[in-house]
Image (cartoon, rainbow, N blue to C red; front, side, top):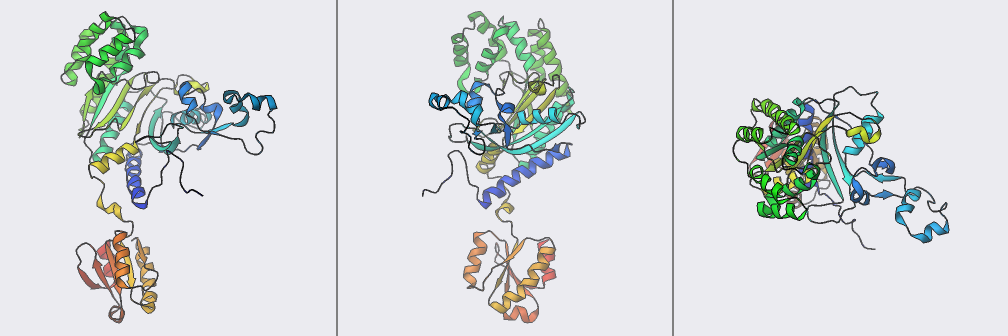
Length: 451
């Protein structure tokens, strides 16, 4: 039998779990400070909930779960022999693994709307699954860390999300830049160049500016059928430089004929006014090439990139006006974003920013020379644990070298050594495994020292 796990999934060692939990705990603490409350939704959703929400390609990436029991009993021979998976799937699979946290959240809001008070601020930290082709940095099972506010169109929430992002990355000690744009500005630009109905083609191309450069963006626009005149009109906008205030001033001149574009500028100015007095550690930059998820977002769009690290965005989100419309409850506006936990993990590793204390969950190991010493250690171990200190005892009186190897392998910072002389004194020999220093101490003194 071959032992292994499915492609695109991962095992996590104790050290990796300690690092992941550090990320989740940091993010969770920020969410809570800003009044977001945690919910969880099932790993399994009805396929009727999931299908048709992510486009044709997204539907193909959904993991479908076979019905319980003899799922093929009701199928005719003709249906089986036709081998038409599209028609067969609804008859043999009614459920699927969630693809993201957004659609289940929309379902949750609609299903529980009579129990919720709006604005409703929720966060979720849960795994999602996609039947994607596994490759570096892309997995079939991964975690998302989402925070959303629904039931309000106040732009104060956009500013709060930016403050939350700043707090989280300040805690991680990762310098970042928060890139900000507005869907209405992009719509106004498309109007201005006479290609209002081609906004998706235009923004998909300009969104690649950082990766392929201006010349290639222009070539892609022309290849998509955008007129040469429209491409020429785009150049001053694509090359816009300066401070946020300077960019906005220039945009007001350029987009003056577009009511939609001017509305986007007004919204951006309000958000920037809020964050200007927030004393953020990280910078917020207006970026007109930012165009993530245009079919989904309707207002502010934001993305976070780590400074000095060659990696894509590590957080992103924006404003949407009709989250719950897909389930028959139109007009519920919201704004939200998601932390990319896996990418944050990679950045922290690359920059060596994980706290050293994560290496061990155990602060103290009792090491006994013989069976009598082992019995002496057990009540002391309980006292230490009841004092809130993570501790364990080596289960057999093995050679001291072996016990020390165990402590080092598990990055235990202190070892309480117990032999005849320690028991006669009613104490333990506390060894600092980092400095090598040893001190004879009572168990109460050990507790105070480790606290």
